[in-house]
Image 1 (cartoon, rainbow, N blue to C red):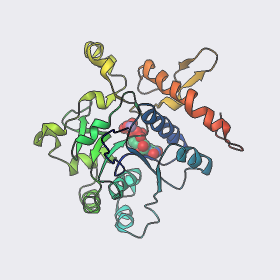
Image 2 (cartoon, rainbow, N blue to C red):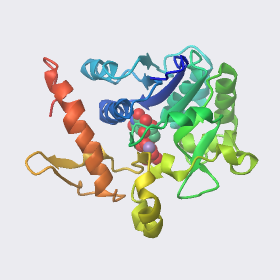
Image 3 (cartoon, rainbow, N blue to C red):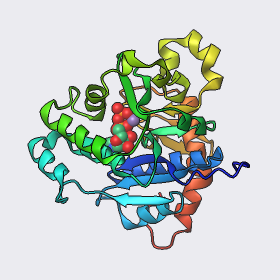
Length: 278
Ligand code: UDP
Ligand code: MN
């Protein structure tokens, strides 16, 4: 693909799932990266709860699967976690920095969807991310460029133990650790089209009308995720679950489901003896 003989084996998109529900998201975001013809590796961190049939599905899309279990590990994370049990999933996300076989990575939450090629993100340096819509002086930690390093990993653990996370999750911790993001270097501010929070058309419709067709990555933040919607196979329409907290733009939820129905579900159904196919 590169044409110039470059070797991108040491650069990867990285995501994380701790259960099969989020794994549906990882199947869709991984497929969406393949569909836009990425030249980079796909890597995923999983925890022991992810089932074997789901691991087989993930292995058809991802080049590298790393099981992580901070609770069982004998290293610093274990000790850190004992003091901060509230940060369980956050600690798992920090493992991304231990993927030192890669020189640069782009982390994508499992609730994202890639609409256009974003390989140019690898031209950016750590820590590049887009502003959070709720507090734009903080970055949103659903999409970020980083450089794996055991030293940084230890620094993040240290930060987790000593300072904690002001929102109880990875975003608070990462914003504390990379605290000069807002002011130090404008090149580390990703354009919003690289992490477009679904539902933005309700908060700033004219901007969405102007820039919406440039969106490259959609991020379905909040409790309600695309895989919780119902899809009517007869009509191809989607309906929201009853207890929604965020109303995602249905056009993007539909795009998520189109990827799922056309590419992901057929592979699940092909698998013999799996109970994932509903
Ligand atoms: N995640 C996970 N299992 C969980 C919760 C979160 O694997 O039970 C991972 C997943 O990659 C997810 C990310 O952590 O996308 C961040 O959580 P989420 O996307 O739900 O947070 P939001 O973007 O809504 O703030
Ligand atoms: Mn997310």
